[in-house]
Amino acid sequence: MSADSEAGAVPKALRVLEEVAARKRPLAIAEIAAALDLAQPTAHRIVATLERLGFVGREPGRRRVIEGPRLVRLGLDTIQSAAGSSTRHAILAALARKTGESCNLGVAVNGEVIYVDRVESQWPLGLRFEAGSRVPLHCTAIGKLMLSQMPAAMLDAHIANGRLARYTATTITEPKKLREELQRIHRQGYSIDNQEFMSGVVCMAVPVDGPRGDGQVCAGLAISAAQARVTLTGVKRYLPELRAAAKQMSRELADGGQSVSKERKKHGIPKCS
Image 1 (tube, rainbow, N blue to C red):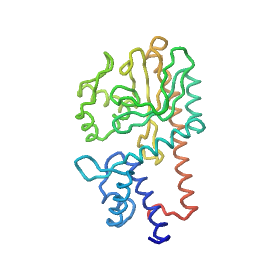
Image 2 (cartoon, rainbow, N blue to C red):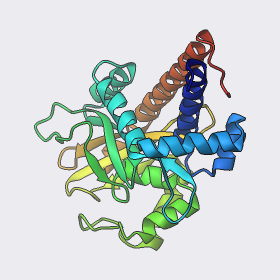
Image 3 (tube, helix red, strand yellow):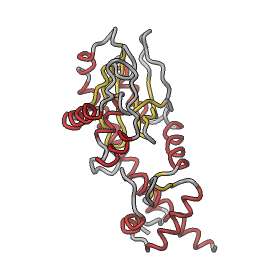
Image 4 (cartoon, helix red, strand yellow):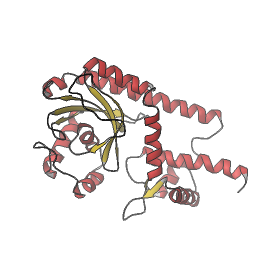
């Protein structure tokens, strides 16, 4: 393959990865081709190459395209490597100082929440998690928030997988009750964990919108506290501060996306090629 061909193939492959990563559902190759203005044979060839490399995969039992393990690992590694010095971490640290509680940012990956950044409280009863820790979706504040944003088919599949394990006396394990809880979360715009994952721990989470500015939720921002020190009602009083921090993070993501677009134009890489 010539150098010119390689130069054209790399931007196209990167655009395919961006499209797969940005969507909240599996994509047919025809959808990818249409979104990026690619010929379908070209889209098939790119997807096949990315699949061999582990950057994309296929939906179980179907042929639609989903993120692959290498793409997920690359995204998480990138976020975590910047955690200590980024503007996002500074926003999280400021929220922790203002509330006096542990604050964390999490995303939903492969049926779990992964904390991509976290600032612990200074209280003796602080909660000792680290960036990269994994927790369940159905019984954590961020997890339920992310479930409330899922398309119906994806939510059905998650519940059908039998992942509603009981962790405490208040864990919601009945599908009907969980769906009612998720509908309430979707309406009110925030989620709570009332000792559902860990006894004695209460949490609240709000959505962080993605960089496209289309209202899609890309992450959850949460505060957590020991119930012996702060009641659930006490945690809820920080909802305005939590939402303000989430808006700051959304703006930061949007600014980052604009920077990427400027770099693409600077180097002559078209948005859709």
